[in-house]
Image (cartoon, rainbow, N blue to C red):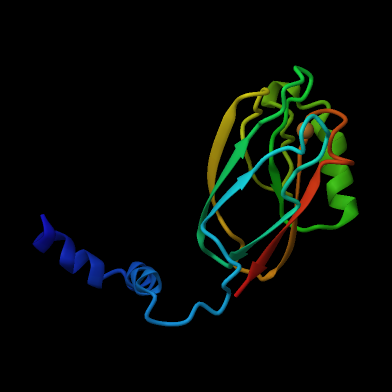
Length: 158
Ligand SMILES: [Cu+2]
C-alpha cells in the first residue's frame, strides 16, 4: 500500500508541498490562517458570533456552522461571496428571498460556496477552496431578512 502511494506523492508537487507545510519545518507566514473554521450565531440574534476569519489563498477549508440558537425562527446558513462589496451583498441577499426552492441560496455567480440551511440545534459543514486572490470576501446568512445584519469577512492571504 505505502509503496504504491509513494510514487503518487512525488508526482503531486502540490500535495508534497502541503505535507511539508504540516511538518512545521518552516515558520508559518500567516499564523492566523486556518484550515477549519467553526461559526456560530450570536445567541438568538441575526448575527454571526465570528465575524471574521483568515485563510491561506488556494487552500481547502472545512467550514462548520453550528446553529446554537434556541429560537425556532432562527434558521441560518453561511454563504460565501466572491467579494465584499455592498452591491454584491445586497443583490445576493435580495435574490435569496425568492430562492426558497434552493434553501435560500440564489443562483448567482457571486456565490462562492454555501452551507445547507441549519435549524436551531443543527450543525452543517461544507468544504471549499479558498480563492487564489488575496483579499476580503464577505459571508452572509441568506435566510430571508437576515443578510443585512448577519455578515462577516473572510480574509484571504498569500
Ligand atoms: Cu440567519
